[in-house]
Image (cartoon, rainbow, N blue to C red; front, side, top):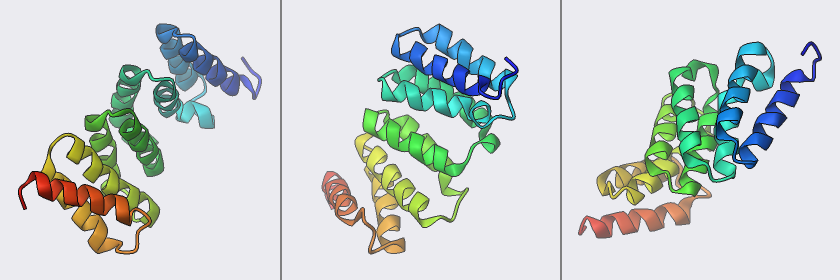
Length: 168
């Protein structure tokens, strides 16, 4: 427990427990990690790590629970962690959580790469939620702010589909 490698060992154990389907044990391990080693890098990011690992193995509900806890301690996490989780939620079809993650980022950073991904993620998730007005808003803002975005074609497609759904 006093080794400098102890936080990494707990992190690894939590990830293995997730992969083995030992959900409750993994949650306890990540909670222990955050409590026992709060100054370590993995201790500070234990909830993010748990959410990311859970999404990678398809445990969407567990990731949602960890994300909710992250939001309650949002100041502890960086905007890019919310963007990455938003993208993972998007990839898993967890549209509501993707919107929540991207919404958090929108006011917290001025970094172009994060804002581009955020605006696209908001548009795409809202499109999938059939909130076409919100999808149009996100994609329009993306196209106006970053007209040469690498997400240009994908954004234009979602924008077109949203307009079609709105009969515009």
